[in-house]
Image 1 (cartoon, helix red, strand yellow):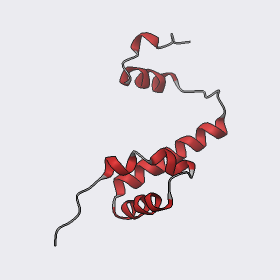
Image 2: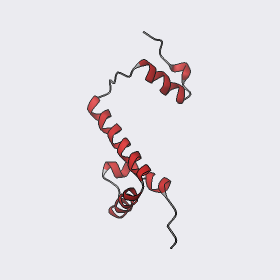
Image 3: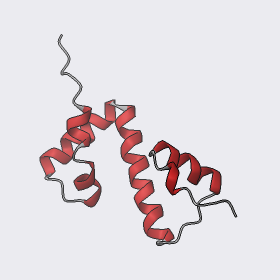
Length: 86
């Protein structure tokens, strides 16, 4: 029996609409069915959902530890924007 090719990138391109509740029902059902069998996509959706929740509950001012800020800026190739250590 031939398995349908994994279409994770296509499905996850709809993640924003899915989490906003604006994804059409048929695509929502397809994404949810896919996530039941794809742990990686479940993790992506769950992590994104939690990140959005934390952002909304924390407000705009978030105290990020200096080492985490440095790693993030470095990963984004924004080393020149790293604020000086206090």
